[in-house]
Length: 312
Image: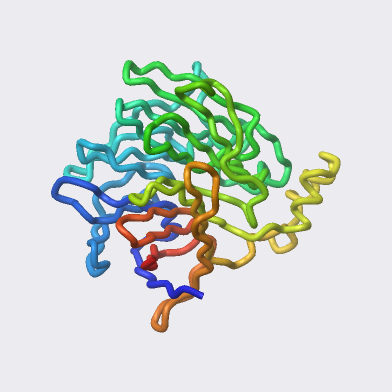
């Protein structure tokens, strides 16, 4: 079992992580917490600064070539955040005039096209379990072109989550948490406009995904497969609704695990990391963010007041 170094941050639920690849923040790691704060962590993990506040609930974070952060805010929508000034700019909060309910994760193409997920059109982040257990399949993969045009690329997804682009930009991946798959949508080439699966029958429920500096598509496994949830998702809707109306202590809960996997662009499994806190690390679980950067794998968690890393 590979050891894990845990770095506390002054906020709960450091859901995603991204590493700055240029500019004055080179090598720094950014994360967002449930109170709306965006934090910058020094490359060695010894210094943590709050650089901005979104006014909502930041989830997926991407680093842009101009040094800004692209933030998927579950409550506000798609945002630009400038870590130098703390300025927050709304990109879009709606699609075809209808407000997004659950803006989740994104990727930026070389030409500036933004690909991102809206996990559900029925339930927001406060009721993510309702969407997951009821299996509404209302998740979407969205695209914003450089001219500002927004389009729905894929719909009917089982809790659309992490988004990542191939190295050549010829396909974009989106994780389906509820189906335990990573869907691949072909952007160019002979398969343009079609879809298939980069990964299927994952050993648990994927959350955020990202392409590392190693060229691999890294996938978080937020929780192992739960037989009860699997049965509920296939059962009558009345039973699914009943399960989500039970008191919290009786509802299905994510199992405690720290696991990430990585696939190459042909869909071959390359890494399966089962992680545990190091000798001086605190407990850590429900990994929802992952970013491989030059052999170091950074992690975020929807529930933990910390980020973490392990070295390959």
